[in-house]
Image (cartoon, rainbow, N blue to C red; front, side):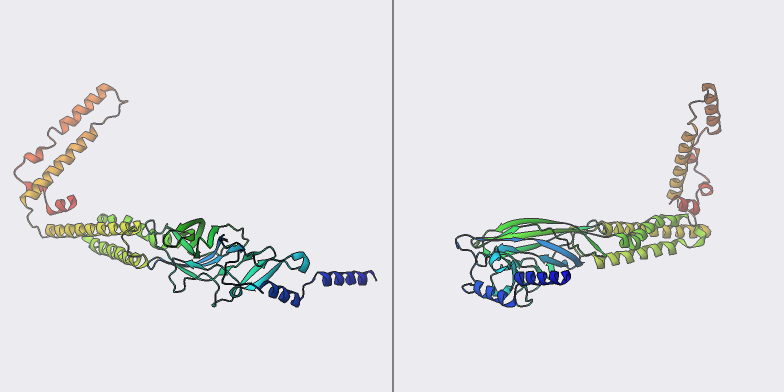
Length: 397
């Protein structure tokens, strides 16, 4: 019996506080009776209407660096106060009513840096959106959808690059009738994760365009960076490895004949990576990617190494054929050997300071006795062929 009474009381309360279909339509008809959607809904027409707006960037779909196009899924939430659509919620027990956006006044906003033909940021006829009208006249019109905006890529630190792309919104009316204001909303809707890009922050600011007609602007600058792990493993690490491997070709023996093939292989690999980077990055001069510059330097270094390897192989071939060494190359080699002996002699004269002075003097005398004239080779005018061969010239190079 008590349970039946409880349900009966709950049904009476629900009937008392419920809102019927006719109540909603009756209130809508009463509010829209003398309403003109083409007139700014303020009682004093000398005052502009203030539209507060914010953005929630749901996700980054893609960013084409070469074309400079950013595809995103933003949610814009303009809010304003409609002074013509107000009612007493205690009388009709209705707090909020959804109105079709095309049936009431709503702000027309233009996305200035869009790359699509439609600049209007509004629901319009493409999407039959709704505007929420509260009893105190507060109105909200969420606008969401795929947006393509122009954004120049900054690839200087590629693949550790960071980009700054903006959403430039302009009011459809002059400041005499409408003013845009930045208003931050706390949203529980988390942004979607992107496999390539990570959103860092969004900067909000308002501005004014002066000209024949003053209009208000709202600028939202999004900062996002690349996730470089994939590019580090597949591009950066191989390029660094090739740069370290390039000079090792000189450690191969001349008789093996593998110096030239290894040098050519490394050069072709660097050219392949250079073409791959050029295909991915935009062809701009300011700024040029540091990775592109470094690969160009490594490719130039590889060309120099290849030339040196070819020269040394030619000299080695001359040595096997017992070709005579020109006189100026013999003199250069003799002077080099003389200089090398002087350096070796100076290094031998560096004796540890903890040894006794008499022991140091005796060791210095012994070294001088063994090397009375370390540069005597440069005075020899004969038998240069015995000390200067094509093999020695190749080693020197």
